[in-house]
Image (tube, rainbow, N blue to C red; front, side, top):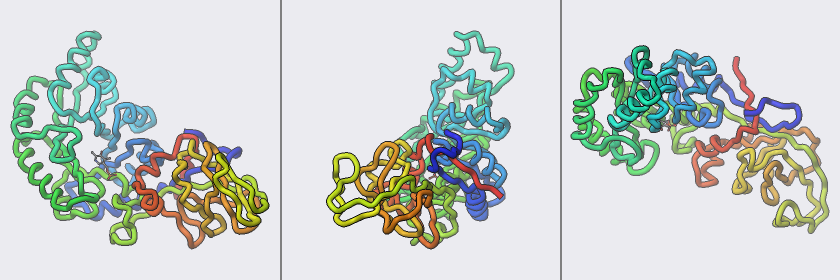
Length: 385
Ligand SMILES: *Cc1c(COP(=O)(O)O)cnc(C)c1O
C-alpha cells in the first residue's frame, strides 16, 4: 500500500472509530460465552489489515480471521504476535514449518494434511520443530455451501478416530459456513443447521470451539446465533449489511460506514458543444459544459463499468463523462469549480451520500467487491480519536 502523498489527492479515509462502534454494536447481541473474531482477510476488505486488526482487538475482538497463511504472517510480522489467527481457506501442507513457527491456526478438511506436513518436516530435517510447537487446527464441515469441508457423519467419525495418531496436532475447533444467511432461500438456513447438528454430534467434547456465525447470522438469525462459540464478523465491521439493504434493515441503520473514497478536481475547462471526451470519443458535449478531470481510474479500483456512478462534488451528484481511464476520469460539473475541490466517490458530502451499498446495488454487485477492488495505489488514511 502506498503512503499518503502530497502529489496526488486520491485517498481512502478509514474511520477506525466507526469500525470499533460496529464491533461493539454486534457484541451487544452476543452472550458472555461467545467470542468475536474480526475478519481481516483481503487486507481487511480493502481497509488495511494491520490498523483494522489493532482497532478490532482494542474493541474486544478475541481473534483474527484471514484467508491465507501469507495474510496471517503479515499480521504476525506487524505486531500482532499473540492473538489467535485462523486461516479460513485451505493451505498447502508444504508450508508447515512457517505455520508452526508463526503459531497460525489453520483450517483442514482431512488427515491427509497431517500426513503430508509430517513428510515435509521429515524430508527437510525439521521434525524437531514438533518438540517445540503444536499445530492448531479447525475442521471445516460442508453443510451446504459446497465449498470446503467434510460432508458426512462417517467422514467426521473417521477424522475423529485417526486424529489421535497425531499427538502434535491440537484439534481446537470445527466450523461451517452458511450460504443463504445473507440472502437466498431462507429455508436453506434451516437445512444447513440440521446438517450441522448431525455432523457436530460426531465431534468429540475435547474440541473447544463450534462456530458458524458470520455477519448475516449475527445480525439476522438471533435465534441460531447464540450457539456459535465464535462470531466471525466481516462486512458489518466495515459498516455494511450483507444484503446492502440499508434502508430496509433495522440493523443496518446501526452500522457506520468506515471508508470514504475521495479525490480532488485537478483540472477544469469549459468546452464548446460537440466536443468529445475520453477514449473512443464516446461522449460528446451537447452544450457548453464544464468538465473536471479527477485523478482516479480503474487502476485505483474505480472500474470502467462504474461510469454510471455519479460522484459528489460540492454536495451535488455529477456524472462521469466518457470512459474511465486507468488513472484519471472526467466529470461534468455544474459550473466552474476550483482545482482542489473535493470529489467524493464513496462517502458523504454535506447532506448527500454515496453509500457503498447503494453503489453496489446500482452495479449489481455487493459492497464487499467494491471495497476489495480499491487498489494498493490508493493510500489509506486512518482516523481515530
Ligand atoms: C469471509 C468469511 C466470513 C465473514 O463474512 P461476512 O459476511 O463478511 O461477515 C465468515 N466466515 C467465513 C468462512 C468467511 O469466509
